Image 1 (cartoon, rainbow, N blue to C red):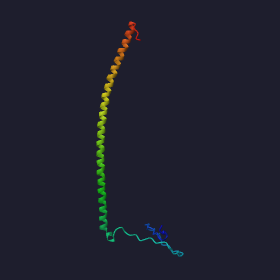
Image 2: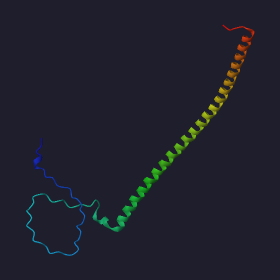
Image 3: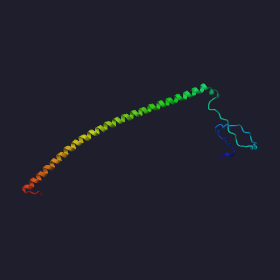
Length: 142
């Protein structure tokens, strides 16, 4: 293990809001002397770009370039969304076609079931008549 006790931790600088200004200047009260601290002082904030880029024109150009990148990304996202919407439209059309075929199949099946039902009722009526005729003759089915 290495000796970590010799390392010194430097706190990350934080941005603080400017202190509010008092309404009227007040006389300063005597303050006790602050004890000397051995704590490390925060490091100076280093800008993420060279100082020569603090020119307003440069800042505007950077902002416009960032805006152009954002618009291009948005354009790509809208294109992908439109493609997905087109795919969804195709799937809905295919579903509509399938449901239409299914409805037609059900209509055909209903016609066939109605035909079989009429035939069954006719056979039932014929069988009832045959039983009645057999009873009238005196023949009983076994």
